[in-house]
Image 1 (tube, rainbow, N blue to C red):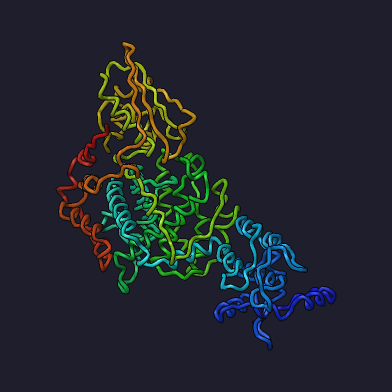
Image 2 (image 1 turned 135 degrees about the horizontal axis):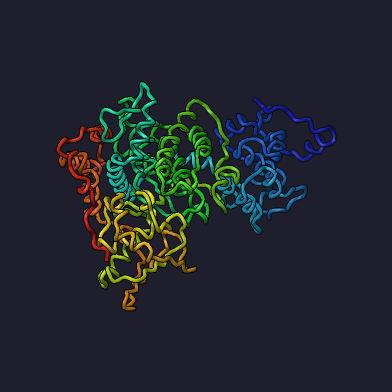
Length: 618
């Protein structure tokens, strides 16, 4: 149905008729594209065939209609206004701005609310409308480049297939999945996990999923994902990426909860799980690469609460098979769920950020499936996702057929002990300097590290504060020669020897040591009572993406983390299933193992056995 005609006034209507020549009908579009444009009001069909809708061009200039429709209307109108436009007699290349009656394309783009990138491309000097010679018209290329960023995310989420996964991405993501599972099992022993579990028991549903290692404890998928997400981040033991976020904890609980709750037919394969997992990881990485601020260790808000929520929504959209339109709506809803301040770092509330990211992603998708609508340009706008990051400059994602995964280019870091990633440089350096000195002769310790305020905690009073303390990690390593899960228990934190060293640690922040996980370093200077000084420096550590954990050590970490809850046989079966995930025909084999009853003999094991192997930190 044609879009209603605008009343432009007799004089302006006459001028418009004079400018609308047969040239407008010479613009070549496909039948499917023509139907789309008629449906959106971009074009209309009359006795002479398709033609651009003049009223929609006016609406486009006033910023109304979808980005695709607005851009299409301006593209069609611009083609009419330039002599020799494609398809017209005597078509030839003409510079932008050429042609009688042409109104500046850049001004039109700005009026339509198109992005900075769109306007910049529209105004590039020397560009031209392509005519003959078989060359692609510039505007067709620009149209693809300038489509809505949000729409491009939705198209990638919907369009990526199993065949797009590379062997490298599959291998890296299997390592992330194994590590995240182990940390989730370990987190079930924490106080914050039990509090989140008790809270979630008030919710019930006919559709339910299992809380890992709790075979009789079932919750609606949203809250199973919430509780398992809390467990994963309860000790700050989960993987870390660059730009800075914890990518896996917001995604894996969502996929396992949904795969268990959905009907058994059709079955989800291991490749289906890997694809949805990587879509969720990819969305997080792409969003963080749109801002320079995201390259640094966060200061204002916790990234998983923002990008993790959208990654969760993307993964859920993929596993549930949402259309491009529904994916776009889910992202819009998810943005309104995002955000958690860094003031709650080093408290029991911080793990809730990960659980909420998982839960809110599922909720956004379920609401989108019920036709709840949001702003379809939410990722394009400074008042949308740009509200979270300074210098936000979004870009349209590549076409799925020519897609390159960020995980192919940027690996993640796996932690050897449960603490903020920046403290791992400190532990590495402290282990090196420890070899040279008697601990009881230390007079002064200076840590030269980036200025990260929420990890500057000289007198930690709780496990969570100790996980976020440069000082505690330094003197714990100097005293014990290793750092393990029990190192952060309160009785360890309150040891007299530790408290004695607390007053001897000082922090310095060299200006050239930037707070980025990709570039930071640590230098420790220890002065003894006799005046002797020892200095060591670490530019990276074992487990960082520049020096990744070996597969053997990653599996050893997993075994240590789950040994209290699962039998040795179950542990080895889990390792085998994840290692062969790409060949798994039915993901229920994995979820069945996650809810297998704990072995009584294993439950009685001392928590001391939950330590990871003692790696050489020198």
